[in-house]
Length: 254
Image 1 (cartoon, rainbow, N blue to C red):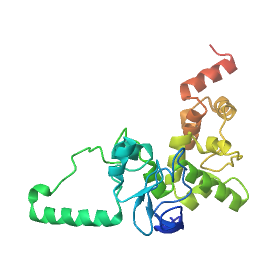
Image 2: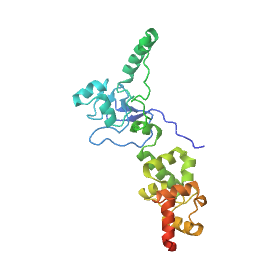
Image 3: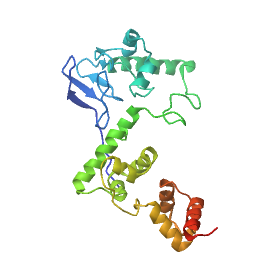
């Protein structure tokens, strides 16, 4: 089993009132905000005062949503623009704890204050058709920059392009599913990074010629292909029907 990283909130030097800020439980690297301050999907909290930094102007505030009126944006618009979860609080820890205490007392004393999320509520981050915020990806180290760093780091350590088996043993199978969804295939992603893909049982270097040659020798019988080969067949823009037609043309059959 791979050793998944345990991330803790950490104190780092920053251009803030106290000279230090607290970075939440996120996995680096982060994507810098263009024409703004801080990083996408990252909440920065001043170490001394606990105030939250505004991604737009760079100043620190106790209650950021109130300040956002100056920028003429709502809190939800701000969160979507900078890759934050809708459920992320934009207030200092001191204010959050005070408000939490009030709400807990209300729920205990008054039943009508027991708020429950409705079914298929918009605040859920895993609903069909709703993309997960970059903040969620930063928490698990699966944004584009983080995946790229993992593959390049493993490649440098091994002295070669890691196969999917190597990636699975180091980072788990979840990252493989993500790469296939985002980039089409691991082979294609390696080429985007400038790496020469290595062959393994998980990512054999399938080409059109490979399938045509195998089909000619086996008459395009679907039972001769493994699950990975069938996936590779679709990755090169073919299917069984197209493959049979190509074989017939090559053999000169009508």
